[in-house]
Length: 224
Picture 1: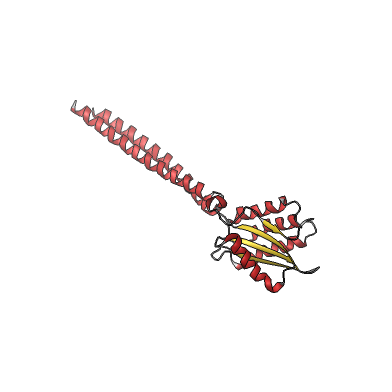
Picture 2: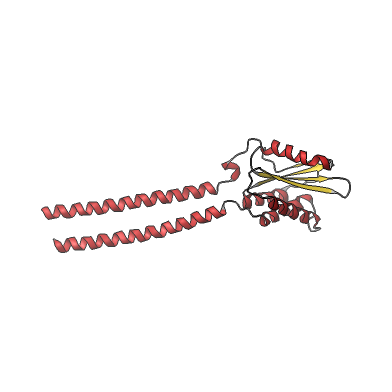
């Protein structure tokens, strides 16, 4: 009888060890899933801007008739870079007043949040100005903003785009590819890799514990 009680006690210890390992693996897996969901959350939902009214552009020129292509390109830009763009089309604001206008509109729209404001100003019949402004602590550099403006200018001059909405939408979509910033995909990729590694280690651990339990059970049977 004494030997049987001793064997049962060993089995309980082994089961307790397996249970603790599974609990730890479950907690680690839960943490990975939580971080993935947190990183893939829509930026607007994760950090809402109380000043933003949900619009993507302001059109004083009246050139945007159908904004589907424009908004689609701007959504692509936000998804790929993690930075929300906003476009303002102005009619004849004096060049020496443009910088002040950009500063004031950015503060009114976004406050201290990190976004990209692009201002297009038609001056006369054949002249326009294109300016960009990001948040003070933005991940986008001046070179990134210049690359986006360059893509917008190229699309604006491309006769293949028959409307302002199509041209600027395509410009934003292409600008997302030319910047050095990316949304959360790098972090998500790392977490997915960690998740896969965790799953593989879990399988290996379970197989190892099962083998050790079988070996221990065989030794107990041989000793009894």
